[in-house]
Image (cartoon, rainbow, N blue to C red):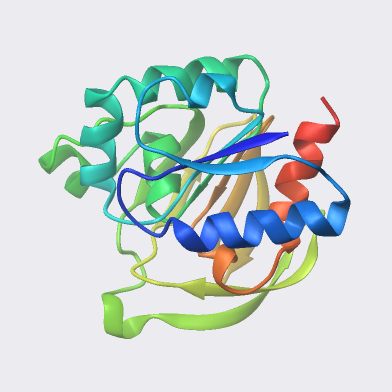
Length: 197
């Protein structure tokens, strides 16, 4: 199995480390690579778009044609996960900040997101969540977005104080928080989606 972590900007190394641990836990052999160039994503079984700054990530993946590769891979049924800024990038609709910065979105998740919904960096926090199909997880929110609206094909996986913070639409996972900082549970679930293809 080949897992690509889109490494143009943001929280990359933690995803690589936790994905390798998740593969070990599941007995899956393969590689986890950081990709910044066109060509690697199309050869992948799983793609992760990490947190970071969504406007910058968007500009870079569209400039280097990585965006088109992600869309094609998603359409072929391969699992794609976006966390924090990655969730924003995967979404179909953004808020006024997304429009103001002209951030191009991939439109793979039929959701509307609001950037920085939980406040600034100093308002970051950790909490326990019940996540459908996974169970209880620890979740770290850092300048996190929130999902304000979901389409009919989108399944809500987790909420925090009535706010939607994790969703799945077929093979696409979007999380407002950072699962890579606490445990392998979410990454094991993501890898299991690829194994069930």
